Image 1 (cartoon, rainbow, N blue to C red):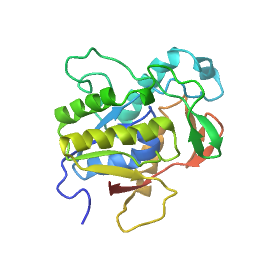
Image 2: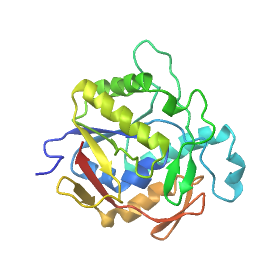
Image 3: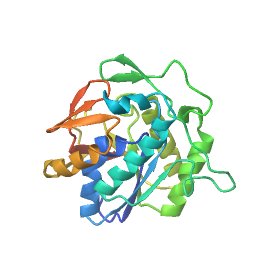
Image 4: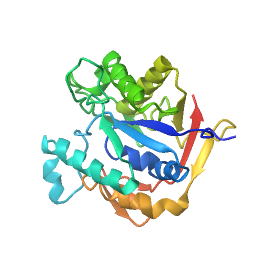
Length: 245
């Protein structure tokens, strides 16, 4: 029996532009092909991210990157087929009675290869500094969209990025508040277990690559691999594990 039996709508909470494609691009397309409607809420604009070498490098550390990553995300969603998207803090992902707001990228530092940790400087509007308000905002979107499942990262956020971990906390709390099932995206480092359902779609690699190419400040697609702004090389992910939390 699949987690997705009888499911008509799902909502993802992702941390930054490009996470939706890097982590769940093939998964999102697979859901559409099953006839399931997908909404994505993105917590921040990822404005503290590095930028790949080249002409776009000038955007790194500037407010222009905030807007460029919004544009990149819009193009990636067009490639993936996602039409229901909002940023957390913007209606309909904003609690009633509150003016629109944006959550800032909390930043990170590398603790060791593949493992992130909190940045040394976290500003007052950083996503990780808000809990009650962020839960209320995400719950507002869930009330609007009325999904059958809420999907976000597992407790370690995949690689311990503070914003990813906070997405887990916010999504699970909002889902619990509304009595909705919460499904975790399982880190690749976790061993197989009977409660993990794997969505494996290597046939969708070209579709995912097309969406990844939209995130041109963050990565470069080379065949079936990605080169990140920091130089890390990663295979394009077309296999996603999920389980009910």
